[in-house]
Image (cartoon, one colour):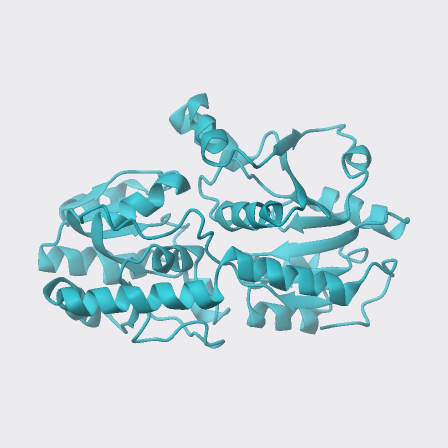
Length: 373
């Protein structure tokens, strides 16, 4: 099978965590003997910001970390038809330009032989409904939504012919424990500030508890405004900016615990969808404490795989316990790793993807929205 992925970027994960999962899926497909190619816009904002802030050398780490992956850039006038010659499956991520999304659908309707899938891993279906609702998906054979609640929303809105739940997961070839590294600091959080979508939550569940307890803390991520950087500094938390995904397992290993702080659109409108960082952190075997979110699909075992807390006070108590009880912390980390390895790896998601492709077959795409799954 030859799969072509249209993504905002494969080479850059600057403010683009979806790249982690997509890389893992492509690596797993290749390990099974399939051929893959990623297509990304030459002027994508993630790629541009990565180069602007870290220099062109920042792109070198991708080739060194993922030598088996190939990504081709495209711009105006690019011949997508030629690029897709011989493709069996075309997977189009939702950050792709709407005009190109429509063009690929027309190619499918006009007789292209590949199976065409749309992939949604964001909250724009609820936060910017007009944008997702305005996409032309009529030619698509199916939609992959990264949570059951999102799948149901697509069906209610009539946005897809067939819609399947396809959660993100951890690339365990990369994200795994590093027991040879001793922890040096108490807590790390890896994530972006996020357009005001979790500013209050980060103060309540990260900054203030660390400050009150006097913990040593580290934060990695991008797009932190001056007031956020000032708050981190006031709490004694070191801000260290963007970190390449290949370095994340070592970063986790040098800390005793991490936290999960979801963005508000997910807690309020899209329950059941954790961030990709939760899968990755648990895969790396670090104890995790989570701010509130509804695990409506039962992805994890709350209280066993990680600790749920309801407010800053409970977060502070949980942090104290993880630091004070190393045996408890080790058991928590082991349980979380066990669940990821049993249910939430990119290998599991490739199994699911292949099952979706089998269920769809390769019948010509139709201009209707009658079939759902």
